[in-house]
Image (cartoon, rainbow, N blue to C red; front, side):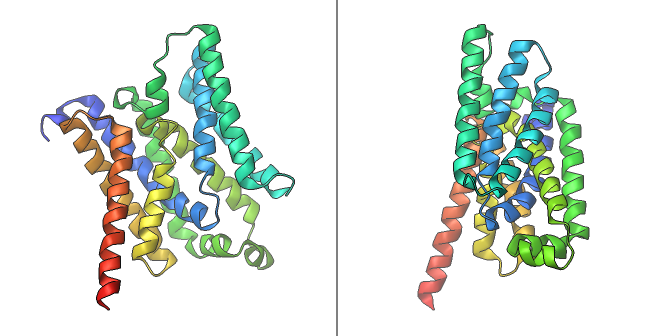
Length: 269
């Protein structure tokens, strides 16, 4: 452990991982309950295309991908509400198209890019700038939930009712879209485009099995995702495994363990 965190890149990876895990879990609870959980997957593929295009154009990947992901999230939400294209179909359309564009851009331009680091993440790619962005995103997410808990609860379970009582649901949708976009783009550096959505989905599914209220679902999801990331990061270092994949498998192991324990408790009753 001492040797592991003697390396600056491991310290940065730990900070970004923990800080990004919190907003991913908080936003994930609302997205999963509203059946919009795959928006994270769609945004990650769009961010991958943005990273690839930035590398081809000689731009800074992070600052190019952030606005692209935010604009894409707005488009997904806006077009998805039009009812002309169903939400899951729209996300699939965006994600597959963006992934294809990114791969073609890299192959045509002949840029020397490690695709694995974009698709599956790399602890070496995490920068100090991403640590600062992660801190800002985590702080905004926590403050949002602390002060707007009841409104977020209303929007999550009944958007029409929330709109009827005067809550500006469109404003909250925009806030969620921005936070989700920032979380996905920064988290991609650790988990990659193909695995980042696990931070949004797994913690909520696990928390929903353990909690009986929205409040505790949010709290347990935030705790679980931090614990799973730290365990996954340590295991990846000790056994020389890919960090992103190890974190996802850690989440999966926790989900299976919780399911088994709850099934055992139910059978005893």
